Length: 234
Image 1 (cartoon, helix red, strand yellow):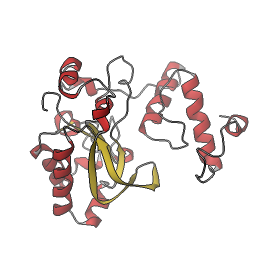
Image 2 (cartoon, rainbow, N blue to C red):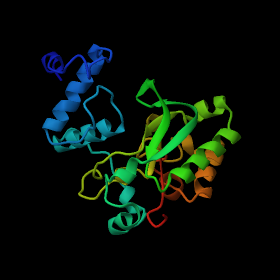
Image 3 (tube, rainbow, N blue to C red):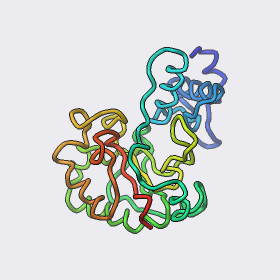
Image 4 (cartoon, rainbow, N blue to C red):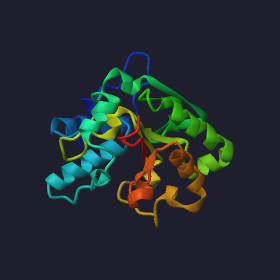
């Protein structure tokens, strides 16, 4: 990425916001270049999150610079797309972000830690159960333990996008999936490396499972950042 390309990215994202740093402008330029090349890095905002990472890995693979990160989430049957539509409606419909979940601890965006998150938008059908999960987690872990586990590092919920490398919709497109601490729980990492695979995270996963949610880490031993509502549960 050249400095000239970075210079073409506006220094301000929107009126009233602080100017982008040179580093964020360079990242935004890379995101814009990926979009121009037909990949999906997410918004051009100067923050390099998991979606930007996946898009970059796909670009590297297409240009023979290395293998792409595997997207193996389809291996777990959380319901067909038709069943998901029957329960949750079409991807991106207003109900996908109508649910509101209050976060009872200090949470920040994983790749932009200055951006605090007090509320998570999700599908309205799962919001009550999700709120119970968060409240239970706040009861069983201290604030210091929550930080140690990385539960304060939010990796996203609703995102109207397709699964990587295919035409099927991501579960995030319905607002029924969440990611946490993506840097220490990478997609391909197994239990020997993922932070949320350690014994002290058992209470976290039990809180989700008690409400019917599913963990790819617990089910298939990869993508330990990811938890979602099952496709056959309303």
